[in-house]
Image 1 (spheres, rainbow, N blue to C red):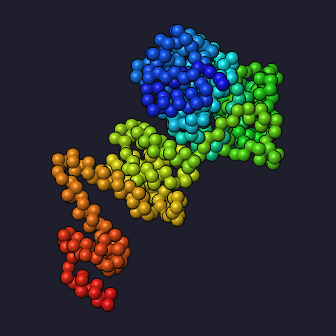
Image 2 (tube, one colour):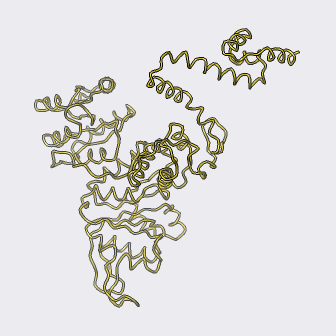
Image 3 (cartoon, helix red, strand yellow):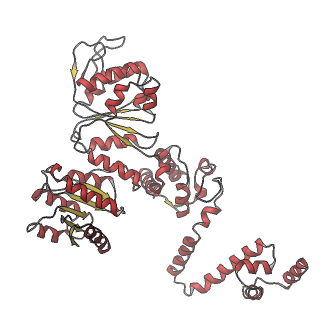
Length: 493
């Protein structure tokens, strides 16, 4: 049985215990550390085969630790674990030399598989020159903690030292250009230009001029030589958005540029050489376009070297509260007002929406809310009317129109009660249970009586009480009258 040495560094004792137990059961020699400094001290004496470390810990953080390990032991694989999953952490981890990035919570089998893979591929690790983490980078505005977005972050991180062509696919409004910007910003070309061109936004007869430029006199109105986007992006990244809309003839010219690294300006006879990384994006099914004869198959294979899929917003609904908070804060800053705050029931409501316009629609909605609603808190009824008319499907429920909010509110009655209690206590009130209990009982009794049309015996059964108990409660709460008893006896007789 293998006796490879594994180190686990995490200030979470439970996490250390689980990993240590699992790896020992698999035959590994495991040593655990509560903080990184102890591991660094031990590293000067003895080195393990693989290290798993958290990012956020007291003292030395995981990324700083990783940098120090890469300096002294460049071939030692380090797996970064973190509960604070974001793009910056993923990119910084890979750039500093992490073998892999493992967002928490993770499946223990996944961690075990990564350790085994690290042991098998130690010789393939790239030596890192820098001992420190990359400097903080400006907010990329790619936000999300969902598993689907973690895969996107991982892909960007893995491509951070690459010049390879990337194809991004996803519905309109999912943020494909943001991903393209991130790929450029976290690449060796980051100091060079990032040039974008949307194929769908340019008239077809002008696309070649936009891409390749033109010589003086190439056509009527060409009074001077003009550089195209390829020359403007030389040394950097050219983002070709909606590549599926590129005319077939232009596809042929693009293929030659990708193959030879050179092209001719429109009307030109001298080849122009460029060094450009291509990042393309589309919301269309390129395979179908190839099948239909509308997209060159050879160009498709040239572009489809690495593909990154951006999920639609409805498929990562857990990211909606975080995205909305970001957009509301930005809109508030732009307009010089305090940012709006989504109520819990509003967050849940928004998570059920289909969001056909994806992240772009959510951003526009947050701008609308910032301008149009007067209060600080956003209730479901404050949403734009078009969002309140779309049917949604809740698990276990029938389809409900978005004009109805009672089901949403019922999901959060306990949260509303908690907020009521907190406010009462902040106001200095005492014995709030004596206040809340009669209110609670009165509400349930009223609902039961409404359901049974005033029949107390049946209402008592719904409440789990006897008839006498209900009668006593009605008197205690001031809800009983003699007329009610006479009327019920007449009904039951």
